Image (cartoon, rainbow, N blue to C red; front, top):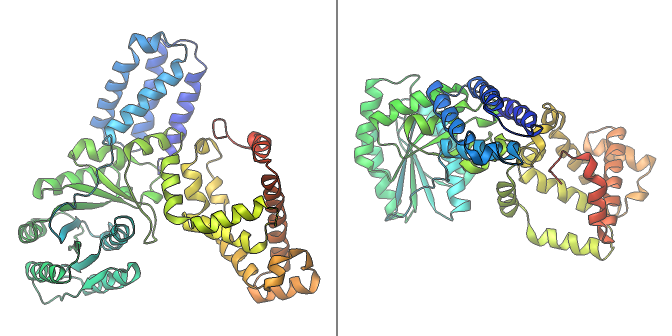
Length: 451
């Protein structure tokens, strides 16, 4: 998300860094570029106008005009205003009620509502240690009930069965009663979507809201609809007391206009971003971190949190001690490393959060073939334990056997062994206390500010 906006703003700000002093003229030129960048990102015009006015007012202050580093001060102002525009801080879920806390999910058809119910159930279970029950009140599509049942099974949430013959209000009452009896912390209610907003749909969901009295009413919307996402959210908010928004399909939205417009237009916070198809692809929305990512400053805090959640600390410590003692880095360790990377969302997810990465070629994430991880794992799994410990013994006939066993070519085995050798050399340097030296040597390979 925000690829185009990041690239355009990054160029504008880089041009400004070389300016010795800020004047009304170069601020005016820069703001024109920022305005164009926001409009191209499909940010709503009233939002763009308000944003530019705020930045202009602060940028014309004496502190900025007299600053020795005007470019940096301007970046700081843009960063602060982007953060304010999107809501300043993460707005978490309010679950401090007598269980079960009811979360009502609303939205149009095709926004990814049912999938998001599963993602949210998983997030609540793993991050908040909550027991979750899910139920579908979509009586118009039998497939929606079956889909939610499948999704619930995948994420380990309890599924409350419902039928297309029942009324949504009756389903809701029965689900609340059952969630209470089974001591569930949270009940998530999936509702029927429509292809457009209509009176009948709104009346039904209002009645459902009255029965459920949910602690959270979340509007699920497809970020790729741009400004329409914000307008649809506003229409729903007029009918329902929304408490927040979940933006889906943000991994496919290169513009990001919805994320920058929704808070300003609806007054409701974005609480989560759907960042992919997997059940783990949901992350809390942090305006300050996203503003940093837009301006090419990365999101190291989210990266660390992601690592804490997904990396096996015990295995990581064992590997660190092994390398430190000079016992060598083998193919089993190598496999473990890219398994950990897969758990963290793959290389493209990591690149997105590292500082300075937006300055790299725009097609870099596409150049990284995530399927390679699966092939590499298959090759290593086709080796004997002895071959994994002592890769030097892997010669001609062994390579052919490994390639056949993994469904790959001998050249794939050769490529993996070459990559492993490079990693092994790096680990040896680290084991000899040469990490600082190694990083200094790598510095020239990375964008300014990253190392």
